[in-house]
Image (cartoon, rainbow, N blue to C red; front, side, top):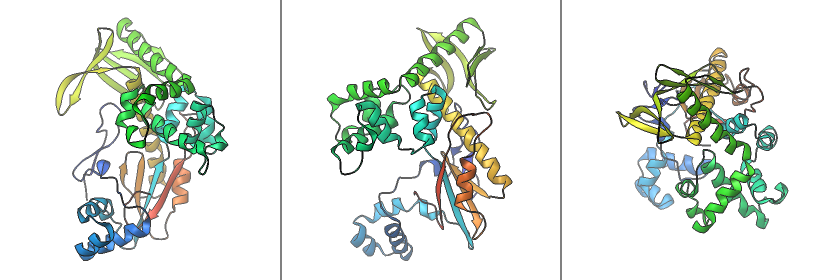
Length: 340
């Protein structure tokens, strides 16, 4: 297959975009466990709908679950699939210099448990299976997934908080608890917005340790630590809000933005550049990269050549322009593509 990805397809971050098969947007499987996935795959290959129905109940759902597994390695090869583990949470903590979060990523990496511990003032060691405090992990998880970019109760709802058993009345307190535990991230949102507004209004340059802003003609340029720039075309202030011109659904429209959204663009762009550094290392080491899926790299290698351990090491190596950013690769090897 060719042409699955478009380089720099995401205008605001520079990430790759899916094309044709849309590998960036494949359905998340509901089948749990590798043995069950293998059994479903074997039955589907045989075309045995009755067997699929007898084992899994809904053949159509099973076929949806198996879309990923249709992407297979060539004969005599296998896929090495490796992800930059929790890369956005790591980059955001690094940008804000939120030290307790950085320490989590440098050690055990249990950010959901650690977040719950910070939010609800419960010792981390108590948030484990079998203890009543373990119920707090779910709140820590949904808060981590929803609130890093200035989201509120609505963002928690979109992330499925109500389906997780969290009451609607609890959402504002959950937002407050997360922001209270991450004061430096909250500060980062407002600092980025204030910096951008100043540059647009005064036509000056603002430089911070890990990012900066300048203006070029009518465009606002966000400078990344990698040396790359993000462009906000015809950026201006309207009713004290930053707006710029961009494409949505292949139409040019006016797009509003704010501190949390700019922090998201910055974080995802840096995450993209971290993955690109790993891709260059892998190519230089002889790895044949077939595709990237968000923060995941998929390589196809002859059996016996290369290893997941080597790829994890390359994806976790420090980056010169991101001093102090703790990175970690996590992945697996498989004959076909799947979620770990």
